[in-house]
Amino acid sequence: MFGNLEDRFGDILKKVRGQGTLSEANIKDALREVRLSLLEADVHFSVVKSFIAEVKERALGNEVLASLSPGQDFVRIVADELTKVMGSAAAEIDLRAKPPLKILLMGLQGAGKTTTAGKLARLLKEKHQKEVLLVPADLQRPAAIHQLQTLARQVGVDAFDTQVGMPVSKVCQQALAQVDRRGQDVAIFDTAGRLAIDLELMEELREAKQLIEPTYTLLVVDAMTGQDAVNVAAEFKAQVGIDGVILTKLDGDARGGAALSVRQVTGAPIYFTGTGEKLDGLELFHPERVAQRILGMGDMLSLIEKTQKTYDEKKAKQLAKKMKRDDFTLEDFREQMAMMQQMGGMKDIIKMLPGGSQIMKQMGGSGPDPDKELLRIEAMINSMTPKERTKPDILDGSRRKRIANGSGTSLTDVNAFLKRFKNMRKMMKKMMKMGPGGLMGMMKQMGGGAGPGGGMSLRPPGMGGRRRR
Image (cartoon, rainbow, N blue to C red):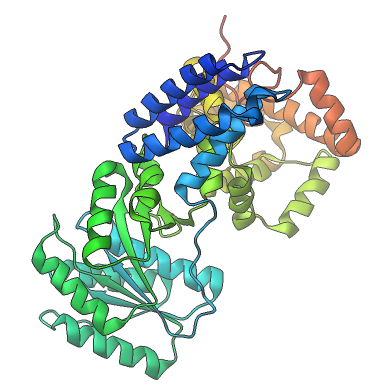
């Protein structure tokens, strides 16, 4: 997500950081490039205009020109203003409100509204331990009723038994009565959409909203449609009224125009962002984190949160003991790879690191795709017997040849991986004995860090490609 914008901003800010001093002239040059990159990213022209004006006013004041590190201060101002454009702080649903919490989801067809309803139900159930009722109120599309009821079973929540042909008013009234009767915490209403905004749709949504009296009316829009998403949000806001927005398909949006425009144009905050088809692909929208990612500063907080979701403290302690004893096996390594895949894969993890986009560009030009390489390694480990995984020292020539044939790789690939795994295991043992202080010293000896220009490998531990000759 935001790939194009990250690349453009990275190049612009690198030039600014390289300036010994900043003058009115080079600030204006930088702002001109920022303006063009935002317009190319399909950010609404009114948002670009006000953003540039705010940055210019702050950058041309003493805040930057009189600073000891003007380049860094300019970057900080851009980050601050980007965050402000998207809403400053994360907008969260108030779960302390008097139950039942009623959430009305609206949107055009194809925006991912029904899937988002399922994702939101899962989030509220698993993270906040809420009892949720999903209400299929999209009577224009009979398949949507079945789809939402299927999603309800998958996430383990109740679904209202909507019958084809029922009027929307009856669905809403009976669903609300069911919520009250069962004492459920949240009711999520999935309403009808159209291919485009029309009078019939708006009237139907107004009627549903009047009957339900929702705690939150959230509009689901497709981030990949850029300014069209912003225009749709503005129209729904004017005709029906919305409390906030959920942006879907954000992982497919390389430009970022909708995320950077919708708050300022509509006044409605972005509550959540949706990625992928999996039901865990709904996250709270953090403007500050998004701004930092766009500017190449990484998103360490989101990375930590992803790690905590898949982190098992007991297993981690066992793993630390194994590393210290030099008893880290290929079976352990396979478990770690599975954890990385649950977190979204190596590409997603690397992109959340400071300078991650630049690292990915370097890797893309000079080595194998990290996620494909992990799959190759997994295939090699899966082709081993349980005994071979726990005792890799028994892997002689004939066993290695069998593993290569079974995994669709070459004997050279298997030998290279096992050699790297052996070296990695030695390194882990040294690190565990050294403690934090010794670890930092080792990193300095290895080349001063993992960023561009450092001596550390950019590939995941134990992962290697073919050497160039």
